[in-house]
Picture 1 (cartoon, one colour):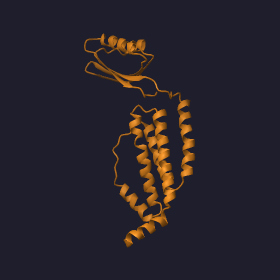
Picture 2 (cartoon, one colour; picture 1 turned 135 degrees about the vertical axis):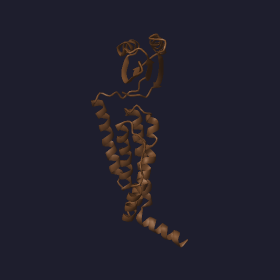
Picture 3 (cartoon, helix red, strand yellow; picture 1 turned 90 degrees about the vertical axis):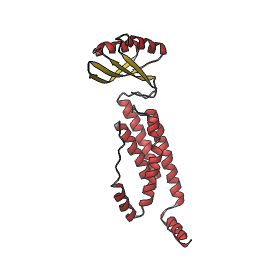
Length: 224
């Protein structure tokens, strides 16, 4: 019991509980805002909703670590030694994902260092800059009905296949082309606004040859 009282006394002398809760809620709120911004305005072709689920836990974890070690040099050195043996194997498919991960970590760092106002002001400046940077580069920020079109065929004529897609879809962009054993694997991103166009495109592609296979993968939140 005496040891517990000593622990509470040490805790209250090093960490202000009210400030701790305020900083914690600030970190969670800013991570939630960043999550919404990434889902709404991000350009990554991966599942942005699923990826953004990591923002709040990552921000709060970083916040907790900084809150604990900031008042103890020994804990800080111990943390450096412990983290030196950690190896991450998660593949980052898009540089944008890395950018938002660093922003999430920054939220935890700044709020954990008792600077919630600085964290809020920084986010108010950074997010508009990211938004306008996308606008300057010509990126669209509105959701459209886009889908992946994957084609496997023995017809080695890319122009003919592209012409078929362009005659049925308003937007066509080649994303991948592989050729092996006199066959081609093609991946396009297309924009479709009706099932009739989709069905007519399927029939036209199937008529290329008997061994042509076509698959359509819906990606409504794909932003280019």
